Every structure is written in C-alpha cells, then in structure tokens.
Length: 175
Image 1 (cartoon, rainbow, N blue to C red):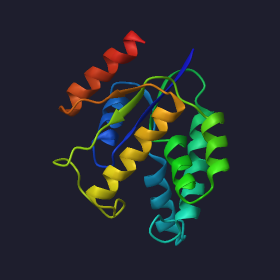
Image 2: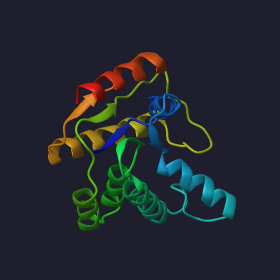
Image 3: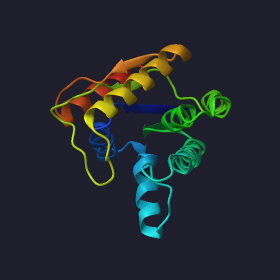
Image 4: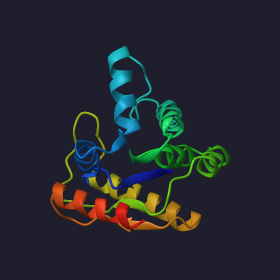
C-alpha cells in the first residue's frame, strides 16, 4: 500500500524540521522542491529563482515535485511541499488550466498536514527571501486550494519538533 502524505502550509512554520525528524525515524521523505531548485539554480548560475524568473522557478518545482510523486512506490512517503505548491505558483502566474491539470493528476492522501503561520518561528534566509506577510498570504492560498478541492487538512500543532513528529506518527497509525 502506498500513502503519499503532504506536509504543507506557511513558510517558516517548521515543516522541514518535522520532515527531517520523520526521516530520522525511518520514514521515506521527499525534501522541499523549492529549496532544491534554488540550490541547483544558484550552483549552475540559472535564472530559475523565485525573485528572478518566477515562471521558470514554478515550472522547475513542478517538474521536480512530479518526479518525487512518481518515484514513490510503496509504504508511507512524506513530502515536504510538492505538486500542490508548484501548481498554485503557476496558477498565481495565470496558468490556471495547467495548474488544475497538475492538481487533478498528482494528488496526496488525506489528510494533508497543514502548518499554520507561526510568527515566532519564521525566519527569512538566503533561500527564503519573502517576509512573514507574504508567507501568510501563501498559506491562505494553500488553505483556500485545499478547501475548494475538498481535500481534508489536519493542522499541525505548535509544539516541539519531537512532539509534532509524535503527533504525525499517531495520525499515520490511525489512518
């Protein structure tokens, strides 16, 4: 049996730390496509960076997220962001039909794990140049997409990384 579990939500809300903890507990994980694209584009001098060429960035993220999705074969695979966020980026750029097709073709199992804004935790860095307000607007878009597609979400509690991982393991065991 294959379960694709998406961890999404507000930038800077602790998603990547949770996914790293789950990897340490033996779960198969897929790291955030956006950060992987930024690192690759920076390393190669590419322009597919969200602050330089947002469309190229979104398309590269979508390509990587689809590859991650397709590589998942069995067991529980936990995704630190994925197709949903890349499709929403394309949607914001006006590629609505393309975004909808990606969302229809590459879904995740319910519930999606949704990390709400956590202002005290949020930090910008060289790969996350957006501010907290932009991150919260992104979260609102993700939440609206989940609502309109009818995909159930479970809000990640504000707690330590270990406690969040325990919470997620309990949800995975129950579902």
